[in-house]
Length: 67
Image 1 (tube, helix red, strand yellow):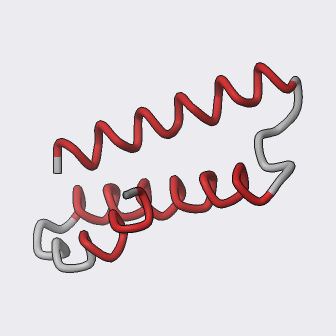
Image 2: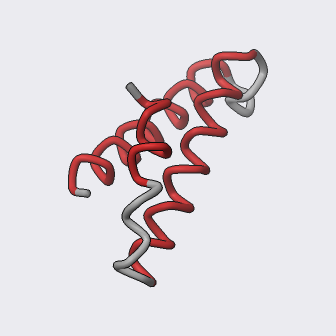
C-alpha cells in the first residue's frame, strides 16, 4: 500500500508539473486525461482502504493501469 501511495503522489506531481508547463489544465489530450482518471481511481481506492481495511481486494485492479 505504501507503493500505491507513493505512486499516487508521484502521479499527482506529474499532473501538476504538466499543467504548469503547458499553462492549462492537464487534461487537454488523451494521455493527460487518462493519467488524471487513473489518479482519481487510485485516490478513491486509497480513501476507501483508509476507511475499511477489508477493501484490499480491488487493489490490483486499481493499481494495474499505473503499470
